[in-house]
Structures are given as structure tokens and as C-alpha cells.
Length: 283
Image (cartoon, rainbow, N blue to C red; front, side):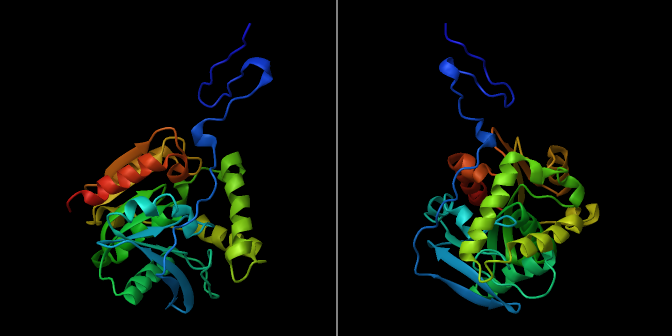
């Protein structure tokens, strides 16, 4: 007789012969994709560092901002779809991937100013922002401090103060696997390949105290914002995400089913559809 037990909320499915089914999609960490080839890439001198960037497609500009510890390659499943309709710019945040850093502490304001510096370098007056995690925070930071440079922002898995982060997230198996993977990628891409531990320590000090925006600052945002998260995000508390959307005037709220902090890898087709739908909407 075939033995079978259905998975409920992440309980693994037991099949005949002792075989185990794949874990739920939201527990998976799919491989890091690669970016398409482009002859429009390089490093920009911005705020005392060298900021790596790449450009794809034509049309209205859209900047993709990756999460903490990661690099622009993580957008490899989004760029081909969005670049069919828009000019897509990806970048490695300071100290991440192929970009350098200086001795200044990491801070979201500083990193958001780097984005503005890249726009200036590329002679782009305004752009839409698509951000994941720290990148989503940067998109909101830009909407708060540089609203004239942002047409709209798709902020996925962002928090607006440290209380929105799930305690002990670094011990979650999926998130822990990401941290380990990011270390290997850092060693391959960084100009300082042996400094990952120091890099993580420096980023962690930022995470402990930033961002720390007030309700007044969020209510003052006039940029169109889509607040997005996966329904099984390991890192961001759902009530926090809902509160962000409720506080920013006119913001949308989108919860992607059966996905986590890595929804853009776990369900790229749906993720891309929602990005394009949001970008196509009027102001």
C-alpha cells in the first residue's frame, strides 16, 4: 500500500519507498542567475568609490537595486523580461559585488546618494526603481530624500525600521544558505575577496539601527509606491509590510503567494508580470 502524507504549511510530503518530495517553493533557494550580455557596462566614479553598473534595452529608465550581501546578478531573471519594454539599469551597491567601498560606515542615505550619483553619471534625470530588501529600502529612501529623481518605486521585502525584521532570521535555513552563497559570490567578484566577514559585520551594524523613518516621513511620500512581499518571507514581518503600505499615501500592497524573501527567484514569471503591470500604470 502506498504511504502518503500531504504537506501542510511546510511539512514534507512522504511518498512510497521512503522518498521525500521537494520542499515547498518558498523554502527553496534557486540558483543565482546570470545577467544577459551587454556592451553597456562599466564602473562609474561616484561618491569616492567605483560603482559597477550595466544597461540593457531602450526606453524609460528602470533601476534595479539588489538586496544586502548580494549583487546585480540576482536580477538575471527579471532583466530580459523588463528590458523588452524599458531601459534597465542594474548596479552593485557600494562594497557589494564588483563595486568598491571606502572607509565610511554603510548607511542607506549614503547608498541612496550613490544611486543618484549613477543617474547623474548616466545623464538620467528620473527613473523608476525596483528594489529587493536593502534595495527596496533604498527605493523608499530615494522617494523620501530625492523625490525629483524617482518616478515610481516597486519596493519588495523592505523594512522602514529594524523592528520590522524577524529576529534570528540568519538562522533560517533558506536565509542561512543565501548568506553562505553570497560569501562565495563575494570572493569571486569583489576587489577585496578575503574581506567577506568584515563586510558582513559592517553591513550588520547598519541593519541594527537603520532605516529608522518616522510615520511623518512615510506619510510625506508622494511618489507612487508598490509595497510587495512574499507570503512566507523569512526576514520581514507581515504586519510591518502591511503597516508600510497603510502609511504611505496611495501605496499599493501586493503579497505574492507561496514565496519568501527570494520570490523573484522562486516565481520569476509572476514577479516580472507584477513589475511590468506596476510600471505600465499611470502616475
